[in-house]
Image (cartoon, rainbow, N blue to C red; front, top):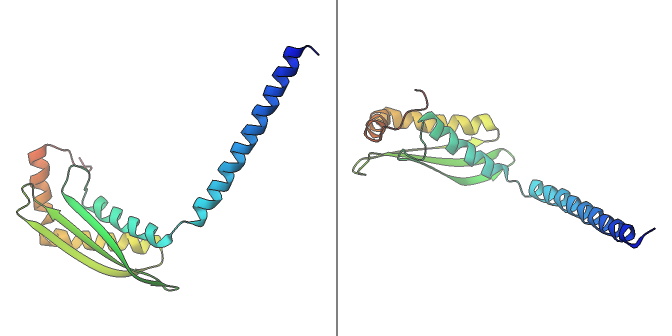
Length: 142
């Protein structure tokens, strides 16, 4: 076998070995990311996103959502969701919050919708309409 082919074969073998090592490390890191998944954090994110989705909030709309885990046990996580809607100059701020025990995704979603409904009852829809009219940002429903 000519020396070029032997060298090429060695490089190919080295490449295959490195590729298998890389694939193995990816598999190991996937297992690690699964091991560190926090269902409480995922429930918090679902509740916040539900509130934002219900109010059609985005990057250009002054809507805030924050959660805090009050406690957690086998029955679920007690999550406090606080939502805020501000007008453009910040002179008016509506705030609502609720606490719920969450064990399933649907419960986190319901918590977000509940706080959004409370904000709408306080006048959030009018504020958001004014914000969107002033900024000419189209609503998701349009």
